[in-house]
Amino acid sequence: APPPPSAHVGPSAVTSTSPAVPTSPPTGLDATVTASTSDFRRPLLDKRQYRTVTLPSNSLRVLLVSDPSSDVEAASAHVKAGHFHDPPGRAGLAHFHEHMLFLGTRAYPEEGAFEKYLTGAGGRANAYTDMEDTNYYFHVTPPPGERGGDG
Image (tube, rainbow, N blue to C red):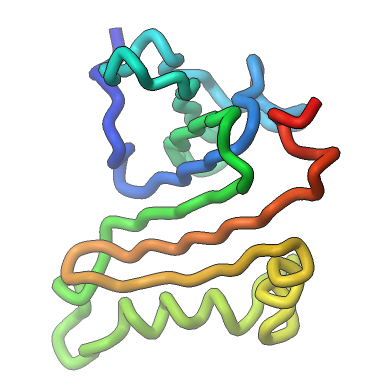
């Protein structure tokens, strides 16, 4: 049996809060489900659903959380590397990498394009670098007809 899942899943993790945790990985994603709701220790009144999956391309372990009562969809990527991991003579490197994400990606190559997309969807993004960790997070507010709890 896999070890009990926790909020920190492996060296990095993505946490998603969305209306429904799918019963299988999305089409085209051959992720392996490593834990489901019943595998998690949680309070009796916690109605959320949980699942962890492992992506085959990079072994990233992903924690998915579904909260049908939530009116936002959110994700967070947690990387176990922060200021204490900066190499000698390169103080600030972890924080620099945090900011690089907001300068453009393959999907959103223009600076600020991802933030513009999120703002248009009623959301925003941010990140922080701590001593041993870096966290990226964003949220969007889907239109009422597209929310999981709205039918």
